Length: 371
Image (cartoon, rainbow, N blue to C red):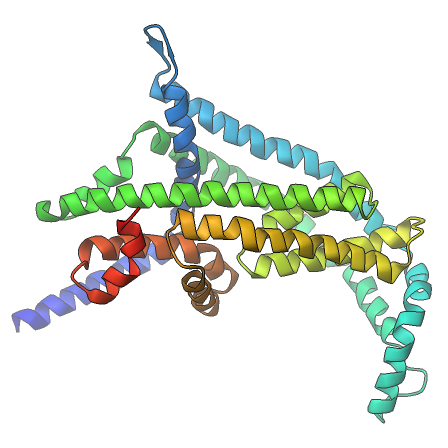
């Protein structure tokens, strides 16, 4: 009876925790983003506090403020850089001449149209796939499609302001008080497990700091390489090239799926650029060149940069990470893919500390122990 009551209490407590987590999911999201910022910023804080000029040294509160201000300035600079370029892109969309596009793609699609007409008897002889495609693009580019977004802009700005203030406030104290999360966690566990918790949080901080710093550098690398390729090889307008390049860098944060979306975006942008500008290169060849630039960048990223991030930062085999991302994507979609690697890293560290007697856990976490 005592065991049954114990299991009922544990199950009830689990359900309560899950319900509270779902109910306060927005606050938990703020905390999660703040934790990521603190993990990226802690090495900067350590570097600043390590500066010594005779007997003077920079206090930690000032180092935390400088670090946070630096991160905010970087994000704001990127926004100010990309905002007018995105405006130019919208202008290109509004002035896109679909008739010119039809003339350019008529010949490449002619054989495809003939094949469809022959293969599907119900198709009429005047069937043209580009006609259906252009009608869809016209509907998509209709400004009425975005009317609901414009109406809710004020609400979005208010929510965004609250989110930014909350994240900055939480991030500051996480950077200021070293070991704040560890101290909170140790108060929730028995004394006999306190050392395990401290070791686990130390390992998690170390692994995730390297992981998020590596992800940031990887995104910057992809964005820079794609932008340079679009400007100097594809001869695309520099402002549009930077927009597409940085978009691909941001999307690259999503493992495996992000690069594919970035490639698709690049082809669409190249199509719009070719329509609105006098490009000497034929349309099909121009699209192939743009796609080749992105594939080359992705090749370097996959075989040079990602192994350094996934293998060296989180100490996991690439195949192991791939399977975890597949499972997370099946469960949680894009959001699951985004949090798969950090969450798996946390779970591995916890297992290595609290389930170290298991042979399976020992095999799974041997690289963490050997770091």
